[in-house]
Image (cartoon, rainbow, N blue to C red; front, top):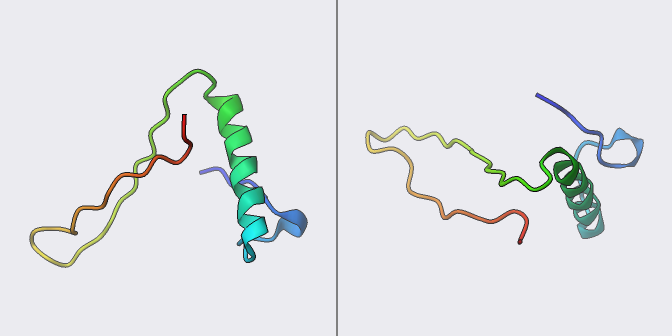
Amino acid sequence: MVHFHSLPGSKRYPEPEDEYAIVLNRYNTVLDELFAGTDVFVVTMDWSHTPTGPAGHPTHEIRPQ
């Protein structure tokens, strides 16, 4: 696991909307450098206590191309 301090003062969570923009911009900069010219897929998990599993979630494109 890698943790990037993305906000001033090593603040952990963005609060106002402008801090979310800072975090997104910084993460996209890192991803652009690490995966230039490559498709990147993010896989997440969900947990359910039902025998059929969690309801389906729509997929989201994190960074429009």
